[in-house]
Length: 123
Image 1 (spheres, rainbow, N blue to C red):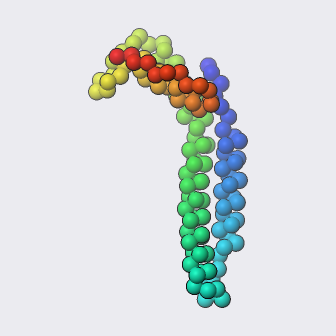
Image 2 (cartoon, one colour; image 1 turned 45 degrees about the vertical axis):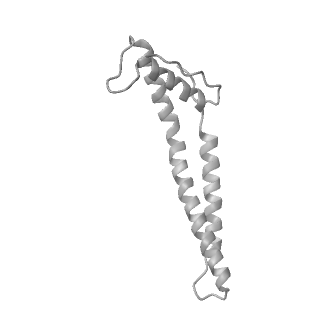
Image 3 (tube, rainbow, N blue to C red; image 1 turned 30 degrees about the horizontal axis):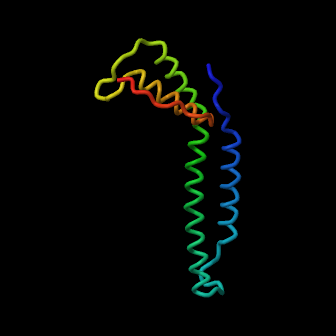
């Protein structure tokens, strides 16, 4: 079985960025009525909203990064199963088992940061 990439550095990087963004959001908080100009208040609100959205996106990226090892491991098992079975057509798709195996190989290679093999037409 092929060794799949470790996502720990990616996960840790995303967690660190999210922590930093949340710290910035926390320091930007101000109470309505504080002595700030209307423009300053608008700028703070706009930055706060933008950073809050970035924090949500980072959380979603973190969830996906944490799931990646299991997804790639499962994809590798599916590829191995496809390579063991005789070639078969997929009903409703213009693909057969070789075409799907080729796509799996490309995705795994891309996740490992390796050059992608060309897609082959297995019709």
